Image (cartoon, rainbow, N blue to C red; front, side, top):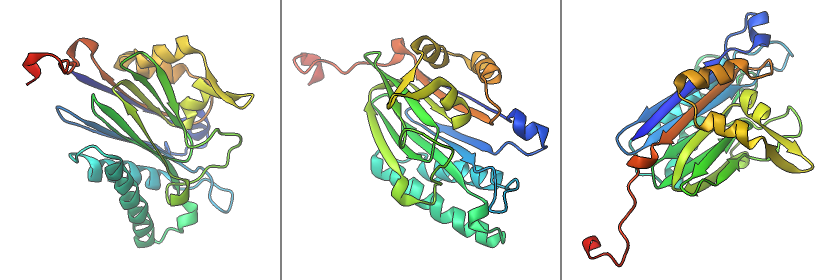
Length: 243
């Protein structure tokens, strides 16, 4: 059985200046797969004032999920989801007469089955995955050292990863991820007890963890989890029943 939880909260800095939540999240699931996208709008435009990047974030999250849902899991499907979304965003902004440099976002997109996590990443934020052996993997485009990030339209900055047999997948915008995972002495480090609180959270706990997390940025996360007792192992190759 697969469970999906999500949360997206407007950051205190945006509340103070009456700016909309510039994070966006979209999710799709069926009996075998989950598709999710977390996007984070670039807050300032080229004039140094608040941008309208919530438009970009909302468009990209819905676009990626819409064109990836129901497809056979593969890195190519996720890659094409990024292509479709980046191209579509530029067309959408042109139709709205919005300068593309003033309305951009990052994007984390995942396609998840009990057998494989396929992740695409553009910009910051990150993905934490626990596999069937209980091992944790942290997926990022690159260790974040400053506030400059690559937007989703920059294809050269896209990164893709695969993790076999995912059991818990946590996708977070930088407003939460940077509070949970830090770059120290060139390595990504985290409090594992705190990480597991997030990975084991139910919907109510996820909302509470996000609301009490430090920082003033918008806070968005999607948690996809497979129940251990309902993930069936394949029979041994030596088992006659496998024939």
